[in-house]
Length: 195
Image 1 (cartoon, rainbow, N blue to C red):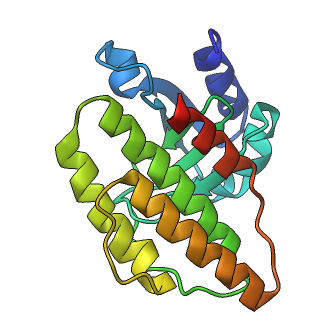
Image 2: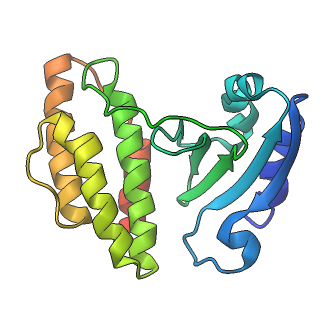
């Protein structure tokens, strides 16, 4: 991962509508901890075109998962790599409304699964940094936005409870819907949490 900055920038800045890609966030300031995200601020002349092409642009990174952050005030393309290593492309000049909680169904379960594990890893990185305030705040948000809509009434008290509740319910819904969601992201996060 020594060249993650150069690679992450090069992959996106080659797009004709990208005006610039700048290393940003705590790692760029030297205030990061071991598990911090790698953040990159992207400016564009045509956000819609870049947004459409982001999956193809980051494909060489071989991501375990990728998604547009559904709850932020500006668009963020989140890419989770093996490690786990999280890369985020921030489109700070754009604005967005937070998306409503997803409605569980056979067509949304995979995206819910991706969002859960991505968010859980973010919470775990804050726990590792000693930010218990953010852990508590985001476990509550995780419950309200993802777990309660799945039918999980009790809010988790910690990461382990969140995993147990989610996996039990997701597995039941897979059976109910007759679908199966990939486990690679889950396996990577679980391995990291055990370390």
